Length: 239
Image 1 (cartoon, helix red, strand yellow):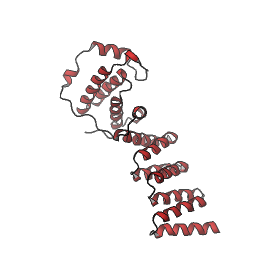
Image 2 (tube, rainbow, N blue to C red):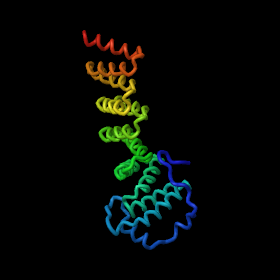
Image 3 (cartoon, one colour):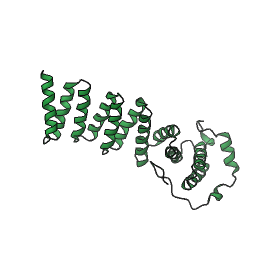
Image 4 (spheres, rainbow, N blue to C red):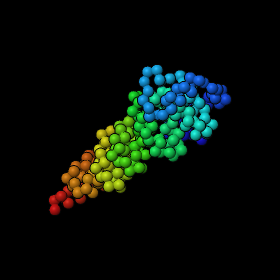
């Protein structure tokens, strides 16, 4: 069984028994700094210990012993709060187990620490935006959704899903932001202009809707559907 949004490391050759030997230094650090929300600097950060716990977590995860994997990943983060791989895999495990309230802050932390654009970052941003939308936290989700569009500019389906979710929830302004962002990254997509116009028309903003429909026609002049939208909107404005 695999986790959902980012793959975990391959099974390690070392046995679980080899990882369970006592380590007094590990015990001292973890006893003192067991809470994940405690800020640690300088000598309290132990990268070697964090790597050891991270490898244990990967082994347990590949054995589908997820609660034990969670414990080891938490220990790795306790030893080194900026260990992005451990943060990623712990978030991934929580997400797989549908413990979304536990996954969300870790995803946010991973995103904040991750400086390079990678598949893991793209997946994390998209996943967190989706989870926040599902929770109705639209003021939070919109920023992640807009960033997801920027990071994955060829994914037109996510644009429609995001916009429809916002619009159906009565958040038309956010749906408009999503379609506008989609147009920015995919300027040749006439359907985005059409949907932007539809929401503007829904909101009674006919002048702006007409501009959006005209943009759709300019991008797809062969479409009778878009041409009819322009004509009908013009007639409504002339009444």
